[in-house]
Image 1: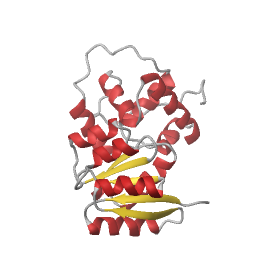
Image 2 (image 1 turned 90 degrees about the vertical axis):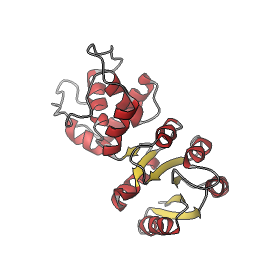
Image 3 (image 1 turned 30 degrees about the horizontal axis):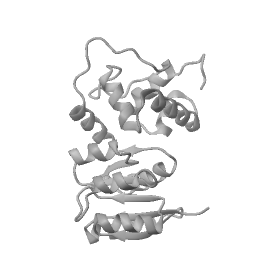
Image 4 (image 1 turned 30 degrees about the vertical axis):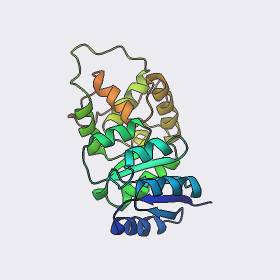
Length: 226
C-alpha cells in the first residue's frame, strides 16, 4: 500500500518536528515536506502534490485560510491550530478544509484526522464542533423547519452534530461504516453543505438537536437495516 504523503505547514520548528515524528511513525504515512509560511506551503503543495496538507491558521506571508482556499479544490487540507474558536477557522471550513484540530488534541486525533481526510471524511475536535455551532448559529426556532432528510438520515445528522465519528455512528445505529458514509454523502447533497460542520450546523439551526444536550440514544430501526 502506498503511504499517504503529508505536507506540514507551520511557522514553529518544534511543531513541525513533532508532527513529523508522529506521522512518520505510522506505516501508512510519510512526511514529504515542511513549510514555515503560507506561500512556501502553496508552492510545495503544487510541486510535491501531497495527499494531505496540515496547515496552521496563522502563518507569515499567507495565513492558513488563504492556503486552504487555494489548495482545497485539489488537495485535502487539515487545519491544526491553537485557537479554540476563531473566525479564520470558520472561513477555512467554508472554503473546504478537510478537518480541524486543536494542536493540544494529541497524536491519536492527528493521525485519525489524516486518515479521515484520505477517506473523504472530515474530523473535527468534538468540543470545537459544539463551540463553533454556538458561535455561528442562532438558537433554533420553536417551530422546527421542514426536513428534506429521511428518518435514518436525521438520526445520523443528530449524531454528527455531537461529534461522533463514522465508526461510532455505525455502532450506535448497528450499520456498517460504509453505510454511514453513503448516508452522509446523501445528507450533504440534500442539504447543500460541504462537510460535517455544515451537517451539524443544519441540525442545530433546524431545531433537530441542541449542542448542549448529550448525544442522543437512538434505537436502531429494525424495518430499515441500512
